[in-house]
Length: 131
Image 1: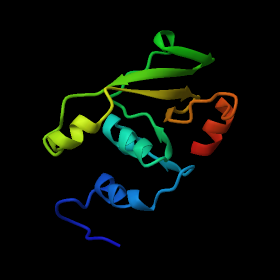
Image 2 (image 1 turned 180 degrees about the vertical axis):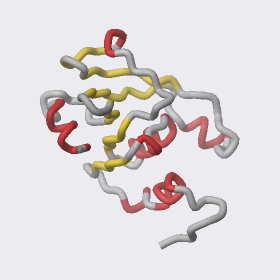
Image 3 (image 1 turned 135 degrees about the horizontal axis):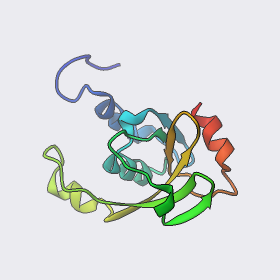
Protein backbone atom coordinates (compact mmCIF):
# COMPACT_ATOMS: atom_id res chain seq x y z
CA UNK A 1 0.00 0.00 0.00
CA UNK A 2 1.15 3.50 -0.74
CA UNK A 3 -0.04 7.07 -1.01
CA UNK A 4 -2.15 7.76 -4.08
CA UNK A 5 -0.93 11.27 -4.88
CA UNK A 6 2.14 13.42 -4.49
CA UNK A 7 5.81 12.93 -5.18
CA UNK A 8 7.08 9.34 -5.62
CA UNK A 9 3.57 7.86 -6.04
CA UNK A 10 3.73 7.10 -9.77
CA UNK A 11 3.84 3.54 -11.05
CA UNK A 12 7.60 3.57 -11.66
CA UNK A 13 8.33 5.01 -8.21
CA UNK A 14 6.14 2.34 -6.61
CA UNK A 15 7.92 -0.37 -8.60
CA UNK A 16 11.31 0.93 -7.39
CA UNK A 17 10.08 0.38 -3.82
CA UNK A 18 9.61 -3.32 -4.64
CA UNK A 19 13.19 -3.87 -5.87
CA UNK A 20 14.34 -5.29 -2.54
CA UNK A 21 11.72 -8.05 -2.86
CA UNK A 22 12.89 -9.23 -6.28
CA UNK A 23 14.73 -12.53 -6.52
CA UNK A 24 17.04 -13.98 -9.13
CA UNK A 25 14.87 -15.48 -11.86
CA UNK A 26 11.84 -13.24 -11.34
CA UNK A 27 10.17 -11.99 -14.52
CA UNK A 28 8.25 -8.73 -14.40
CA UNK A 29 5.43 -8.10 -16.87
CA UNK A 30 4.49 -4.50 -17.60
CA UNK A 31 3.07 -2.11 -20.12
CA UNK A 32 4.92 0.48 -22.18
CA UNK A 33 5.05 2.88 -19.21
CA UNK A 34 7.85 0.80 -17.69
CA UNK A 35 10.00 0.37 -20.80
CA UNK A 36 12.87 2.81 -20.36
CA UNK A 37 16.62 2.35 -20.31
CA UNK A 38 17.17 3.29 -16.66
CA UNK A 39 14.41 1.11 -15.27
CA UNK A 40 15.60 -1.82 -17.40
CA UNK A 41 19.15 -1.37 -16.07
CA UNK A 42 17.97 -1.16 -12.45
CA UNK A 43 15.85 -4.29 -12.81
CA UNK A 44 18.75 -6.21 -14.34
CA UNK A 45 20.92 -5.12 -11.40
CA UNK A 46 18.19 -6.51 -9.12
CA UNK A 47 18.54 -9.85 -11.04
CA UNK A 48 15.02 -9.67 -12.50
CA UNK A 49 14.10 -10.04 -16.15
CA UNK A 50 11.35 -8.09 -17.87
CA UNK A 51 8.73 -8.44 -20.55
CA UNK A 52 7.33 -5.00 -21.38
CA UNK A 53 5.45 -3.55 -24.31
CA UNK A 54 7.63 -1.17 -26.36
CA UNK A 55 7.43 2.47 -25.40
CA UNK A 56 5.88 4.47 -28.24
CA UNK A 57 8.89 6.81 -28.36
CA UNK A 58 11.37 3.99 -29.05
CA UNK A 59 12.00 3.24 -32.71
CA UNK A 60 12.70 -0.41 -33.47
CA UNK A 61 13.85 -1.32 -36.99
CA UNK A 62 14.29 -5.09 -37.27
CA UNK A 63 16.37 -4.61 -40.43
CA UNK A 64 19.01 -2.87 -38.27
CA UNK A 65 19.13 -5.13 -35.22
CA UNK A 66 22.52 -6.01 -33.75
CA UNK A 67 21.74 -9.73 -33.90
CA UNK A 68 18.83 -11.27 -35.77
CA UNK A 69 17.21 -14.15 -33.88
CA UNK A 70 14.34 -14.79 -36.29
CA UNK A 71 11.55 -13.07 -38.13
CA UNK A 72 10.64 -9.93 -36.16
CA UNK A 73 12.92 -11.09 -33.33
CA UNK A 74 16.29 -9.52 -32.63
CA UNK A 75 18.78 -8.09 -30.15
CA UNK A 76 19.38 -4.34 -29.96
CA UNK A 77 21.89 -2.23 -28.04
CA UNK A 78 20.50 0.73 -26.15
CA UNK A 79 22.87 3.58 -25.37
CA UNK A 80 22.54 5.25 -21.98
CA UNK A 81 20.60 8.51 -22.44
CA UNK A 82 21.53 11.79 -20.76
CA UNK A 83 20.95 11.95 -17.01
CA UNK A 84 17.37 12.94 -16.12
CA UNK A 85 16.86 15.65 -13.48
CA UNK A 86 15.46 13.22 -10.91
CA UNK A 87 18.52 10.94 -11.02
CA UNK A 88 21.59 11.64 -8.91
CA UNK A 89 24.94 11.80 -10.65
CA UNK A 90 26.12 8.90 -8.47
CA UNK A 91 23.29 6.62 -9.63
CA UNK A 92 23.75 7.76 -13.25
CA UNK A 93 27.43 6.83 -13.12
CA UNK A 94 26.42 3.30 -12.02
CA UNK A 95 24.20 2.82 -15.08
CA UNK A 96 25.74 0.78 -17.93
CA UNK A 97 26.81 2.72 -21.02
CA UNK A 98 25.03 0.13 -23.17
CA UNK A 99 22.25 -2.32 -22.52
CA UNK A 100 21.25 -5.25 -24.74
CA UNK A 101 17.54 -5.90 -25.11
CA UNK A 102 15.48 -8.22 -27.24
CA UNK A 103 12.55 -7.01 -29.33
CA UNK A 104 9.82 -9.35 -30.53
CA UNK A 105 7.00 -8.20 -32.77
CA UNK A 106 3.61 -9.77 -33.30
CA UNK A 107 0.50 -8.45 -35.05
CA UNK A 108 -0.60 -6.26 -32.12
CA UNK A 109 2.56 -4.93 -30.52
CA UNK A 110 6.31 -4.97 -30.09
CA UNK A 111 7.55 -6.53 -26.87
CA UNK A 112 10.84 -5.60 -25.21
CA UNK A 113 12.49 -8.17 -22.98
CA UNK A 114 15.74 -8.98 -21.23
CA UNK A 115 15.17 -12.70 -21.91
CA UNK A 116 17.82 -12.78 -24.64
CA UNK A 117 18.24 -16.51 -25.29
CA UNK A 118 15.97 -17.41 -28.23
CA UNK A 119 16.42 -21.15 -27.65
CA UNK A 120 15.46 -21.02 -23.98
CA UNK A 121 12.75 -18.39 -24.58
CA UNK A 122 11.33 -18.83 -28.09
CA UNK A 123 9.52 -15.90 -29.70
CA UNK A 124 6.16 -17.62 -29.22
CA UNK A 125 6.77 -17.95 -25.46
CA UNK A 126 7.67 -14.26 -25.13
CA UNK A 127 4.46 -13.31 -26.94
CA UNK A 128 2.44 -15.72 -24.79
CA UNK A 129 3.99 -14.30 -21.59
CA UNK A 130 2.88 -10.80 -22.50
CA UNK A 131 -0.58 -11.56 -23.89
